[in-house]
Length: 112
Image (cartoon, rainbow, N blue to C red):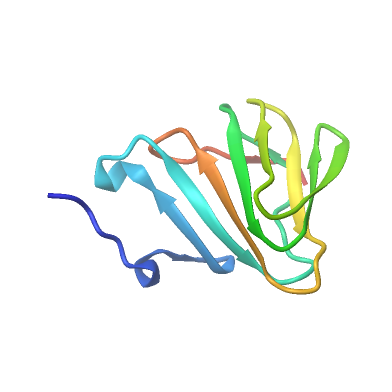
């Protein structure tokens, strides 16, 4: 038996972005399946664990500890634990990105 979780059950306050926390499903990971419009993204924040980003489509400006880069499709970034970071969609269309949290529940401290 496996868990199947329809997207509509995990809509978040971030519009089309899906928030998944693994604890309720016996999974040791959590994630955001980001679907943002141009100009959208989270505030500067930290996590007490590393976070891995995979850009699926679009263009995203990432800021990690003051270092700013542009990611595109199939680019991967790993943000170390306790490192201030944020991202914003700088493309002309939707940004699709997966943000992997290696914990069954997410822990985030907003800095802005």
